[in-house]
Length: 452
Figure 1 (tube, rainbow, N blue to C red):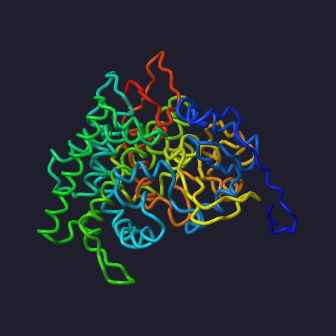
Figure 2 (cartoon, rainbow, N blue to C red):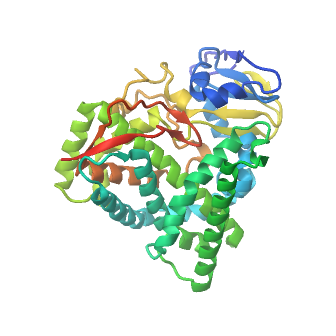
Figure 3 (cartoon, rainbow, N blue to C red):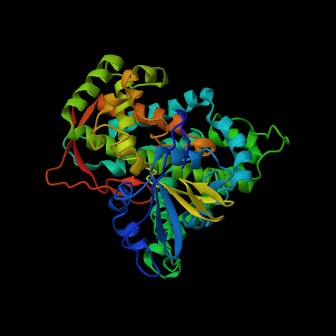
């Protein structure tokens, strides 16, 4: 139980999830229909125990409990089976590092995302959004997910490695990253660890893609070390960073791990959310009309730049609401470093805790009409209705996504630039269902661009 600020006593409800199977626990439900399974659990309790294989895991379903986990990174450190499978892929970067390492890494990586540098990255975003808009053709069906993946891959690669990055290197990122993401998710969702050892074509493709990306990053880091100087990109900032506590910088391996982490986080998540945004706009014509009206008024037909972002309020609200309905990071894990109490229930050291923004964002007690697409719920006069700690697309606490401003800026510019020239019409017969993979995707989303 907990005592709120008004002096009343909160009695937390604890429950155990049904439909557990021997040996695998609830892994079959998490693998086959994770969103339906997880969203069924808040009705059972504020804290729900489930099983991933033989191990117990705990899902906090109330934002106060979620915040208790996120704001106490020392006790609820990153961990769990997903992280352990991700570490061989991402190394010891911001996503996978333990609490002590993460504090130092955060200090060293943060300068790469200072506001002064976001403006420079926005020039890359502007150029790539304009190029993507020019590449579309009237009536020619395109897969929006592939288009957004290509756009964010180019933006992220050029922001990481400067505008001087060779075209073949950008193309390698575009080619290899989707294979790596799919393979990483399959490994993360396998409680047995057997899948990665099978001689399957998908595993060979994953290994090859991972090897190519690792070699590419190692070569670029080595080149930057030799040449020196600040090229105005993320990698230059990482190499120049010095820890305020000990004056040290990052080794080549540490820089490599951060770049791999930022590639994975910067491409897949923003691409998935942008794809959902186009789907939602097509399904809600009134929102699409308002978006078009705003970009026409603000831009007058030109490509948006960084200075336009504050004036694109409705465009930002569309993306904010998209992140609520379909948060790319639909679930992530923490692990207790010592015995503790959560929701009145004792957790041992080493307990897995699951955080699901998707579950929290769709709780009726927290959001009015939670299934409705309503960008205006984020108007200043209405945003106060949203309970503190209940909006979590970027996580929270000391592990909040370091690239949140980068991602919001990129998405706002992409929506505005493309919507100023095109409207996307669904292909009849297309069925869209959320796919809970490494990020929350639409799956294939064929749409037909029409000029405005």
